[in-house]
Amino acid sequence: MNAATVMARCAALDVHTEVPGTITRRYATPALAGALREVEGWMREAGLETRRDAVGNLVGRYAGTVAGAPALLTGSHLDSVPDGGRYDGPLGVLSALSVVERLAARGERLAFPIDVCAFADEESVRYGTTYLGSSALAGRFDAEWLERRDQDGVALRDAMTAFGADADGVAEAALAPRSVLAWIELHIEQGPRLERADVPLGVVTGIQAQERRRIIVTGTAGHAGTTPMDGRRDALAAAAELVLAVERAGRDTNGIVATVGTLSVEPGGINVIPGRATFTIDVRHPDDDTLAAALTEFDAAVTRVAGERRVEVLQTVLSADRAVPCDEGLRAVLAAAVRARSLPVIDLASGAGHDAAALHRLCPVAMLFLRCAGGVSHNPAESIEECDVAVALDVLEHAFRNLPPGARR
Ligand code: HGY
Ligand code: MN
Ligand code: MN
Image (cartoon, rainbow, N blue to C red; front, side, top):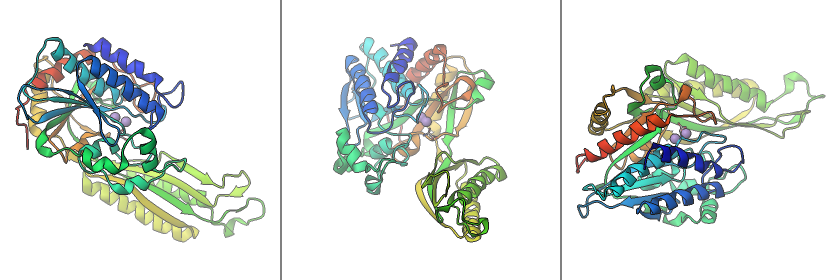
């Protein structure tokens, strides 16, 4: 019921990984199933009524006192990036559970139910679809995603079936807006601002816009020794120019962050001119129009490089999420809860994407950020302080208690 328990439970989830010695927990893998099972056990021990939805999300309900009252949704995700950190996701799930355990220990119930959510996919590592888990609750799960294949060629539909999820039942996982009060999530900041300000918590103003694409460059494979340089259609050399073009788009426009996180080359022989290069781009900015302009600049580079190098370039948009503001009313509730702990209120925009970006279509959303060492995340060095978690639990509990029961827009 306290910060030590939250820290210990976050650590206990490390064993649920696809790659021993790292935290790698992709959607619909046995590793994720193990983490969900362990968290469901903790929820049941706390007296929550648990359920799994068609996507495989876990939801533990702590009933309220007013029949039919819309539920407060809180929690985060349990999947991770490859070789990720221990707290990105689990901190939010287990902190929300800890606040409910505190209420249950006192035999106390709030007017509204509290649904602690452990989403099965937020990072979109396996299928490229951002917020696959929370999208189902928000009714924005795109049936087209079911045909997407992972790096091993496994279709999402088949992965869901093997996971015990129900690909054909996803539409039923959508919640009715009138049944939901709000979404409040605690998450590590994944940036250095709180640490620099020497403050444990921050109130999030909004989540920046982001677009992710897969880009396939097709040239002509050939003999490295016999093909003259001027006759080549080298797919990797063309891709390399485009990788630098993404980086340039980021450097040329203030506030843009642009990343190429994956790149593969075919056929992949040391003495073969690459015939195909596949990479992804992740480009973000707090403003939708500025992001669009940076992507237009990239598209111009694609046209130029394709012409100069006589290669084909196929771009597929994997996800496109507009900037999302956090709800002013909920932000005020979180700010009051922070002040109640005699702390300064730091407002900060989120550079990272979060489930709130999907749930924003369903209900008012708000987030609380927790300081993390060096701002490091998506890295096994991710770390937080137990004393900061203790403060966060108090602030969350204060906020839950002071939510206006009908906190609808
Ligand atoms: O990529 C992100 O911003 C988040 O970690 N899913
Ligand atoms: Mn996260
Ligand atoms: Mn993450």
